[in-house]
Length: 82
Image (tube, rainbow, N blue to C red; front, top):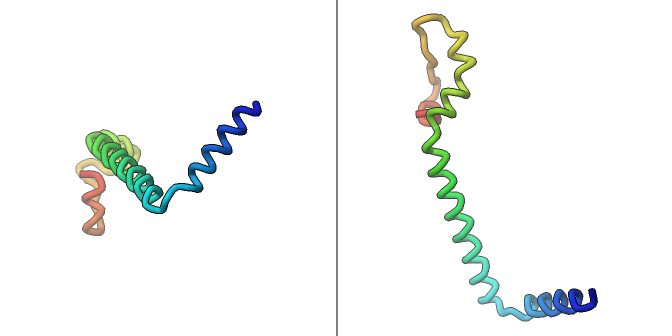
């Protein structure tokens, strides 16, 4: 137990003694990993946009009269579910 507290104190001291450039390097690497993960997640989810869109609009399309379709009222709405 005492050893864990000593190691935690040692790691806190090491963190406090880092130079500003070391903190900035660590921040940069964390941001790069985060943005890469978000980009990969976006690409994977974009591959499933049609099934998700179909599932999302299915209740609305089911109650539309025969021979009609959804109408988008602004330019950007059509790009959400291409």
